Length: 354
Image 1 (cartoon, rainbow, N blue to C red):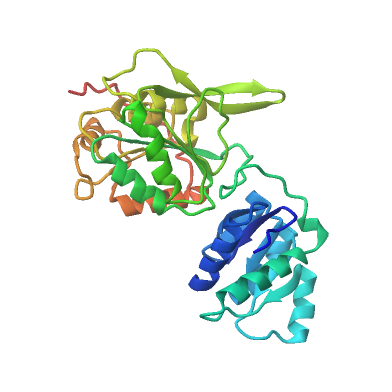
Image 2 (image 1 turned 90 degrees about the vertical axis):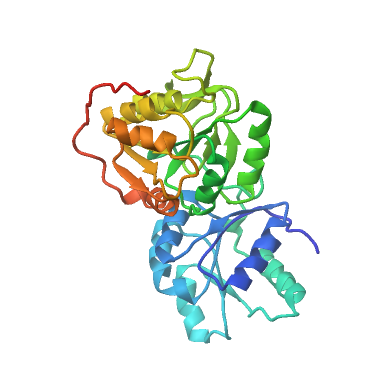
């Protein structure tokens, strides 16, 4: 199958499951195409289009009522998937809001013809869609500094918990996720690869000087402490990664306490701290720092945690805002763009954790 001769960044609307699957396979196979993700509803489509600035959107009748709103937020060419043949009058009206063509229905047994037809329609997209440049396929294009930081810490049982949580995240993530799991260095790369198979969001191991960008998932390297610093770059202050060789606050590397304390120092009330399953009490002092700066702390419930020692330590110290099962924690992260920042700082005394 001939590849596209031009570059596209593509965002999918709420499409039928089989259609979405075929389009995903087709677009991911194109070396000049970057699939930004798939929206669950019209509101998420508009949010993702505004943040990710796709050069092409593919949607169906579920999103048609919001075409004008989509066009106001980000004007770009639109392909329409039609379950039947659209009326000429409807297509003329829709052309006002960027729809330049429609995709014929997908029929079982005719997948190859469907893919060829879609490729032909992509080649015929208006020239304004042919300006994309990117270097890493199958990952989000991200550039903006995040509105929020979400710091997740886990230990025993944490790999499966983090995988389940990441798999439940929506593509339009309004924050940067920073994850510290107690792992040896040689397991970190395989852990990142496993997460990359579970989400279209970019998943990376933290490196020195890496800037934090909206929609990223950054994993602390095994055996090292990851910290967040605020640096001046021209007229802007940017949050970025650093790796610390200083002794940590516990016997665990990477230290959850170290990562949470650094995030609280630079981002204050914009930090959400999450302590998942694990032995010991790493994360308790980090939770204290987040609460002291006006941030929010969530711990995993005993019923859903493989080992309740770390979450239980945060609860006993009085630093947990919420105790939630894992699936509800994922939903809180998904909804963070609309969560209010706590208005009152919390300044408890330093607890002695044994």
